[in-house]
Length: 116
Image 1 (spheres, one colour):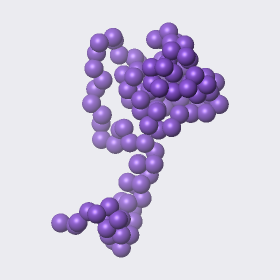
Image 2 (cartoon, rainbow, N blue to C red):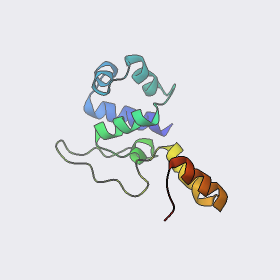
Image 3 (cartoon, rainbow, N blue to C red):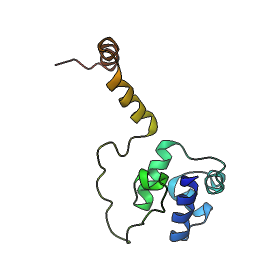
Image 4 (tube, helix red, strand yellow):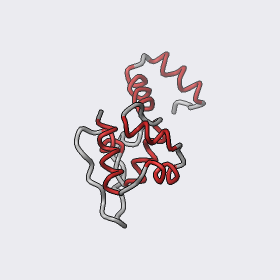
């Protein structure tokens, strides 16, 4: 599981215990232990907090290769187009793009967006 491997790698690099990291990001100790064991993965918003804390992108956190952690004190590069969206956001955008005109109009109406 790429997330588990990359998360554990980041934790080792920073020499964090599950307890310490849980306190840093406001999660439960058991939750962090579950992420480390691969029993479950965090919610998308929590994943974003984790990636931001380690100075990496969501793609790096979930990727097949170990992330390269930035040097202490360096800034994370700005997100590229589409990066930072959780899976649900990405799927919604993709579905909207392939929807017919009537469905798109209904979505815009629900969101209160007026077509220009």
